[in-house]
Length: 277
Length: 276
Image (cartoon, rainbow over the protein chains, first blue to last red):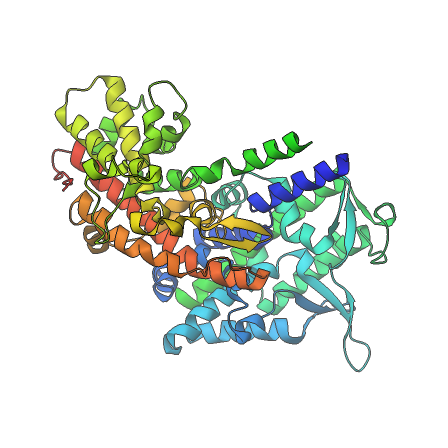
């Protein structure tokens, strides 16, 4: 009976509020807002002209919201693929992002709708690629790359006494549980108020490929998110799953916060280079 | 057990019976605040004991159960005729439908404005009337706060996504929050972006003109839903994508119009917004 009451309560609360958004919404907005804080006035004015005077933050989750409306939008990747041996980006996600950035470099020549979708794709997926949970590793030693590790598996979240999908933890759980009442401006002020120019220069040095390799390398060797929470059988019972406890959540929160900041700073660099003239 | 479940359901649906969410009211007030003249800001600051209008954005709702403020429950909506003009209060007050009788938002707004214009208010009365204006103007830009007596069945429209939901309630609570998690300052950052010409067009005319224009436009929202639709996750998202540009635009318009009313009342250099 108690279980029934609990189930009804959780269902009603979940249905009456909007708890199912996260890195999707909050962190994407935070990344775009941090980027916006670092735009030159010219770059900001030029890119906003392309999106009907809106802020890039307005469109930070556009691709999540609208991807089912057109086949071509649905094909744009949100998870980046990497060779597990080298951490080099491989396949469509990298190619798509490179192509979008190249299109944006000629933004004055692009038709209005293509320009808008390119901006929406860039401000969203570029943020996604900075989320460790959006790093998928492939074994590239054979004829075709073979998927080895993604975050699409369940683990046990000790602090909430529940099983959860690991991807969802990185997508929404860490950011929401870390700072449940924060808006994107709170994230911007908290993460981006006292960083040095040296730090900005160090994280924004290099190319798209360098940045993506950096994310994959950190995920694999420094953050070790897959090693710390190994995948178990999909039919495993709750007590057989890998456990994430409060300490690990704190550690993951620091990683997420760091990646949000880096993502925003790099996004600003790209936009300034393209729209700053 | 039944009692327990009933209490949970009641608690979760209480907000469905009110209005724009607290966040939206705060957003509208914040956009207005960003468009107040210095003279208006200072007068309001003095009237509200150093606070700005965002602090009071939802005050009228918070007071609805306080003795002496019970009538404010009837100040949240406006009833309009088929030609979209506000119903004559004499007619609406004697209408057979309770929801029409209770739609006194425009009259309450007009009374609050006239009270401030009279310059005969105590400090507390002045503060309360400012707060009424802040909340009512916000509500008069929520499409589901327009009562169309000849089409009251529209208010019963519903859809199913996870659970059966009222369309009216969706507009008030989820039409923005289903897409954006904005706080009040974020509403300003996102929506306070109109040019001076656009703001002039939005604030042109009288409050009655605004209500009539809104009433005509807001009828259209009922064509966006086929009553009784059951949505898949994908279809629900696609459907929400048609709603949020409308709801966010109304939030911005409400903010600019609220600023116009307050600037007219408190800044001698700004003309008053006429009621009719």
